Length: 408
Image (cartoon, rainbow, N blue to C red):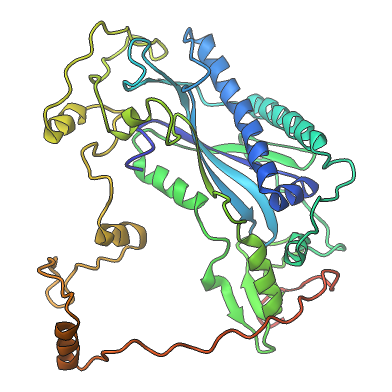
């Protein structure tokens, strides 16, 4: 929020895949990365074409930006890989005389239902061609032996006899051949709190612990947020079966769940201008047309002499970050307060903010203080090592049993 996303309007694009495709994407990390790249190319190309209609000629590189949150689950704890992509509702126009200066943002009109349908057709065409080149749509067999827990989690939570009823299409949503594209969630350029909530939604965990409950027979009940077509909303799992499903939701080693694309990438040229570092350009002047490009400057102004000058200079810039002069790393107490709402420096007695006076690094002094306070001076003993795991249950076991409530 402070170091990556500048102040502009954003829209969330959610891309889901049919069951036969999501299985290959979840089992092959490289294939999922290539599928995401193909989907972003379709959306970025569509944005640049819309900008050209308004008389702006954006460059192919460093004109778009996106942040992708990869999710490997759905509300029924199934292995269902899909993408939540946060993309600005516009493009960035870099300055031709100074590529490292802050680019100018050109806002675009929101998409229509016809645009979402056309974009979904383009994504389906590119992803299908990718899977055919990799030989995944011919036989449906992976190169490596599939893991049992992934096979278990990929099974549908609904029973085969249960009727499947699709929900009516919301605005700015398209479905075709099991694919879906939704672009109905958007936030205003000044709604930074709404943008933070949108990012937190993409970073949410696969399940909420408050929805788990242990039944009298030892099974685990999970209350879903949405009901099935027959009204069922409670899933019943054996303890080991639930653990196997959770293991399938863990991403592979080296697989990044948060991706930065285009101008938002860490090594993109001109990236520091959006993050508040190395700013050498002045605040953009008001333009007569919202789709007109800024006039090129003949000579860049001198850089600010201090961080305070930078804050004052960028304070009125609507595209600037919240605090360009903030330190690169936050203190641990600030991270706890922003992430979990825990103020570790708040005094429990008076409620004032505590300050760090000194750190005790002498073992003898630390032992005397702990003994005076009546606290143990040694670390707790280690627990027993884990026992070898039991054989995994077969992947062809009966499907999970559902209940209408906790007593069923």
